Length: 589
Image (cartoon, rainbow, N blue to C red; front, top):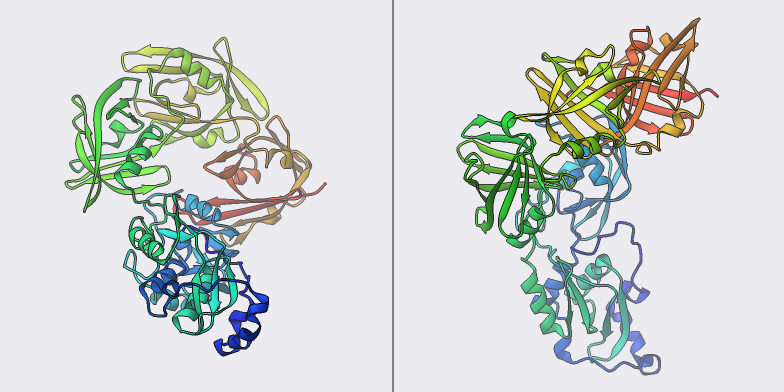
């Protein structure tokens, strides 16, 4: 349905609706004195078993598909707020916007099973808008089993909705008006139409009435015939999204074309004829143009052009790509999944492409000037580094790079800037980046710039790869001011079920605004590095104390679970999304 099915609307119909119909007749004697309404045409009366009455009822059924990421059921909805646990993170879902937070956590790891635990008891809203308190998972599963399966035909109509308020005239068997009822939402409409269907009241809808279609178009109807026609013509014109693939969307050809043209798309996975070619085509960028041309930027900045077209069949949406010089992309691909900012293409025979929308990508020739301008904006943190197949990024926790004019680059270590130089070169394979920093031979390698945006630089050479991500001052304003505002102590440190808090008794921790990290206590004075940043809607805190015991155990990029003015809770997750460590810092002063 277009209008939200509010779980908190408790507005009741007037007292008249809550009493049996025979009681309504008591008011007919004074009707002429209190209400001056012309009796309606009997042809506009809603009949209990009429098609229109059934259509109005179906239009007002509670649509439970919006929260399928929580309950996997389109015929019921969980009343908000509700608390859920996703990969160890406890999330209070206060609004539909929080569904995106759950989805973001699900997407952190690929090829895994997305699981979510609900904290009971919860309140469930059924299709008829009744509310039921559920005490456990078993009771919820029983209700879910009563729903129809994914994308099966159901009774609710979601492609058209009433614009509220609307009003009904209620009258007696002699068609004398005895009251008017104002309806404010779907719940009130469903309950009222149920009374009409049960022949408890006689009523007619007061026109004109405005209806809203799935695409936002408004239709004004002036009588029952127009209303019935509008609902019947609209009811099957949109995707009701009655499935549990919470990130997908279905498109008409026009919407698919517009979606593709919105921004450039970057290749993240590529398979052709059962051969994995991700290494060959990763970070290729495609820009779909209005004139059916598609411009592709290969690694190194080479530009290729081709054509594209779409069509929608019984099989689904199809995207045809044609390149004279790039046969691997030339195919009519089945669009088998579309999420927010992600499109997945497939064709039989082991062919697959996964692309992500990147509005910041400029598909134009990479130039030395553009590279330098990107690099000089903000700090850059080493997100990933592999040298001779050995992972090295942990050596750069809390130590961002900063590029300056005159080919100067600085690495912030323990709050101090180590100065070096950098150079942008040009080879047959594309532009390169080479840095010289004392004591950092891993960075001195000549790196080929394979992918470049304002926020991301991907570098590689034989047996080595590095990813730099941009961080601008202010991007972690929710964290930095809290960290530097006082002195902290470890109130809890857990590794799985082991409580290791005692190792840090007597120590205090301080965060310097320049990136220097202190730990003092038990006659020791340690200095390290810290760096807080945001990555894909989540906050992280990188801390690095070197090899100093016991603080070397805290060297990590911790996810910030909770932060207040006097308490910080950090968590460390395994590759499969399970919580391995929890660190809690509390302000001492």
